Length: 82
Image (cartoon, rainbow, N blue to C red; front, top):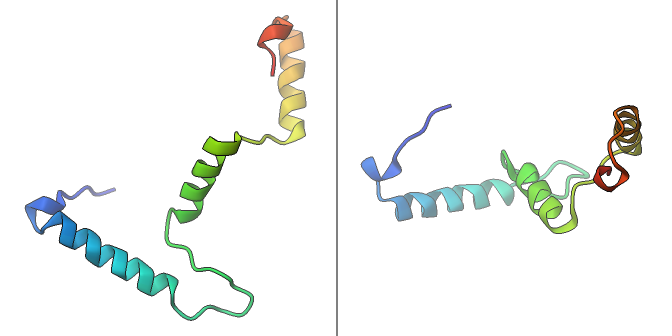
């Protein structure tokens, strides 16, 4: 990972404008057949994060059942179980 202080080498507002334009250019590019949207790195994860903040995190039923079994094994009170 690399961290760069943009203000040390460029105006951060101008840099942000150029980056927004570059992302828009990529996202509006020609898509392969059956592709409805082009994603940039981290975009899917950011959408998932926002959806989970609104709707909660979903767990597979197997994970929930395993957690319940562990809670029973260790006598976790019902009020503390998922």
